[in-house]
Length: 365
Image (cartoon, rainbow, N blue to C red; front, top):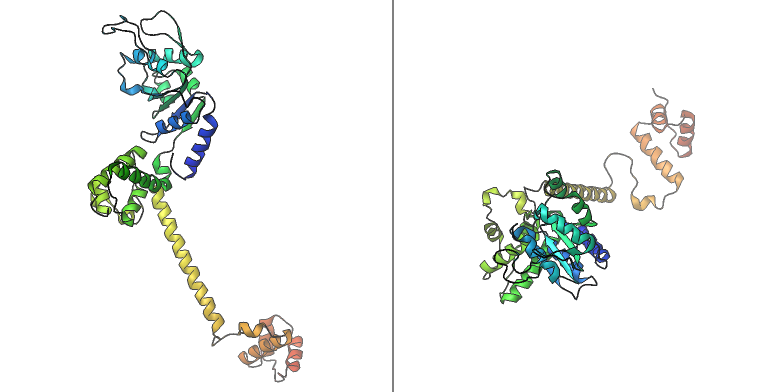
């Protein structure tokens, strides 16, 4: 559950709200995204935390024995059943059972599983009496159960019963700000556990790791980290080491990838373009700032100008005199042109010329 991205912060809050209850939870997310970690966290924060937490991978159990594994069997119920055997539900009594890859559960077994969810009852294979069990059920899948329902390979009533609470774990590529934290955590755990020295990693290599898509999610990042450290424990890890470990030829890496963008991630390219645009805007603002400083520090050769230090101490009449003197000289005393420029009447302008000693004004057309 390590990370400070918004999706992970929200996920932790949901877990805190769900854990104290006994409601059934369905966890969805891509393979390797951490579904079992979330299930374990729910159990640890629940009132059942001191009781067993049993994990069952439904996809790893052959269809012929899955009911026996889940519900147990009685002696002689089938060939090889030489003694009574507890199932996973009985082993998890009082605690939590986590059924991973629930989409792989056979249809016949789904019926019996639904009965356990609804009233806590089941029957052992070969048995003739109903057993009672008190377990918190958490299921997980990386498949689209609604699509399986349409394909008649998953029961609709079981789906709606399972998803009383549906927690979706975002893939690692959608919370890339967590990658560095996870990478550093995996390094710390692995080096301490194996007494290996970590000599560091170059910024280019870290940028690449932080912007890689990680199709296998957190599980892939963890395995990658452990292999990378093991094979490069005698040196500072560089970009070539990372690419070699990921089996990525240099020819497939765009220059932009080395600078922090991955060509397989269009959003990252967009973010990169926006980042470059922001830099350009900042450069322009910086240049304009210098231009303003230069303007305030020097009097232009052409045009009316009053310096900042002078304008703070000048009166309105003095400012007006400066302005009229400038235009008087510019237009050689032509009252018509000056009045038109200043949008005032000829009479008013002539009066002001006399006021400021500019008495040679001419009514030239």
